[in-house]
Amino acid sequence: MIRLAREDDWPAILEVHRAAFGPEDVPRIASELHARADLYVPGHVMNTWNRIEETGKRVLQLSPLGVLPSHQRQGHGSELVRASLDAVRAAGEPLLLVEGAPAYYSRFGFLRADELGLLPPPEALYDWAFQVAVLDQGAVLPQGRVVYSAPFRH
Picture 1: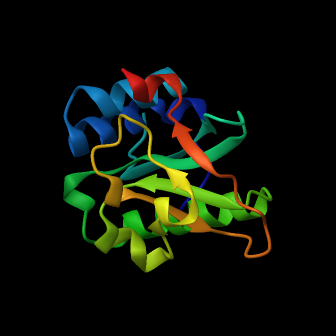
Picture 2: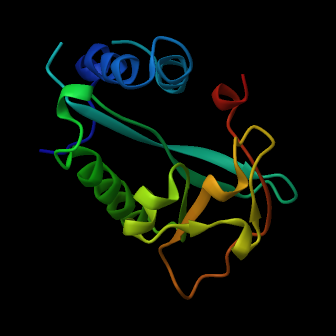
């Protein structure tokens, strides 16, 4: 079951990110992006607003995404990615960014963002891992360097 997070989900959401990534950055980012929060949650995903440096245009990024290690490789992450894509498409956004393994995200239609004129932020670890899924083939996509929201820049 995939649904929108409720306030009482946040302790479990943060535990997913701690277990998946360790106690530091990703749980802190998720906490700063939302804050707070007993229920068993095997995974969690957020879509975070970033902006294009040159124009200030807002663009969404799929991040953070985490699945408890005991529930990985069972399709939970894939379902969260699909739900994220569907939600962003339903909101009328033309694209969704992600920084992650191309071998994983290419299955969902993500491709190198720089090939479409969306340059990775300085904090991105690898240019080739910064990707975009085009959700509206007729849309004019923004061009320029992406700037992560503040929690990602620490």
